[in-house]
Length: 229
Ligand code: ADE
Image (tube, rainbow, N blue to C red):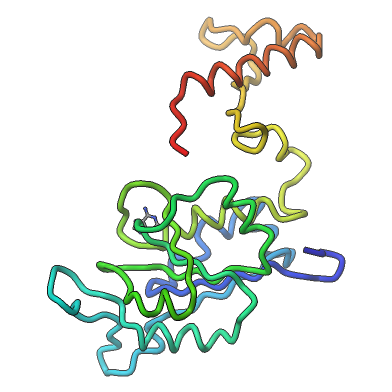
């Protein structure tokens, strides 16, 4: 990705609830990066491609069963309208492979992303296969639809784009980016809060000791918390 050449990381979101976007993607560092055109956001309302007067986007499942399935013909029209064969296609679903930091890094090197937000009982499998969508889950639990999952995925990916994080945030020491260790605990002023003091080593000014303490904390905290990766 080359900012000098005005190259944008291109994000297109297909949803039946376009009004929820940009939501958290429009604030803070990621929101500023959007304004600076480091990345680009297009929201596509799947319902705009519905053909009947009720603007239906779902129908009953073949073979019976509960709930409704998102229709392939309508989603197909929405995808075709993008005329984009360069971006990676991701479908947010609890059936997908669970997102982790390695996957996040990989996605941040793509030309861009087309994100399909599932709703109801799911999406007709033919759309997923035909358009080669990769199914991604944000965790082993079920939420109401892919929109919140899209926020999670994009917040993790977009912050890795060159130029998104400011000087106060750094990528190299935080959880999962370095040797899969979690972060050490952080403290700020006041030094004495409710009689609880900041660990003395942090106020010692001895950079070697501080680094050793922090490294040790990272190892201990990683060991003591079961990592669900
Ligand atoms: N839609 C519903 N639950 C989800 C999950 N866990 N991950 C991604 N999309 C979802």
